Length: 186
View 1 (cartoon, rainbow, N blue to C red):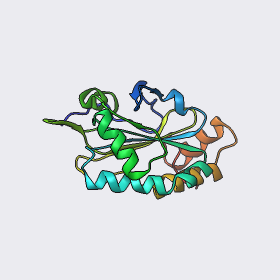
View 2: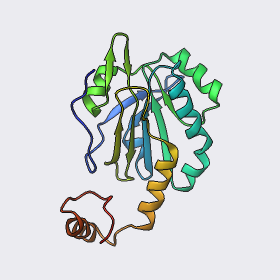
View 3: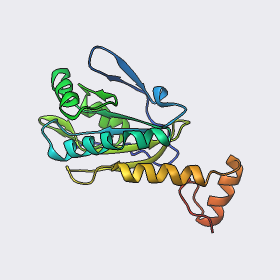
View 4: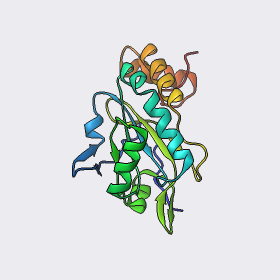
């Protein structure tokens, strides 16, 4: 497995193009700007854990829209397999295909297996301004990001938004000495 550049809260999410079925390209993170973004990296189409995760996110798609969040999933599967996966689960969010597992792992810190090449589950929640808020990495099929955590986090952040960036900095430094946005108030 590879992966050395872990995304921490506040880190910018690396720019990349995501191939979508039909020749369209989604540009990360720019195409998610202005909304919270959920980016999922998944194992191959036959993985039951991946299928369960995608079905779970599809079921809460309306709830994600309510908190102004967009979702995107990416894997190493080819276009035909990706089209089949989208149809099988009735996915209404963008699903990318033909990712270079090593390049994605190097850019994001996700784990990748070399033979055959595939990505282990990873999930990222991006701030509307595009930095990473949360990064969840797994070295096996178990432990992916779940939709209830995402919507709960976004609802919490929306309800506890600081008055200004300097207020947030002071609050988190007072609370724990770190500058992340997830610290509770004293």
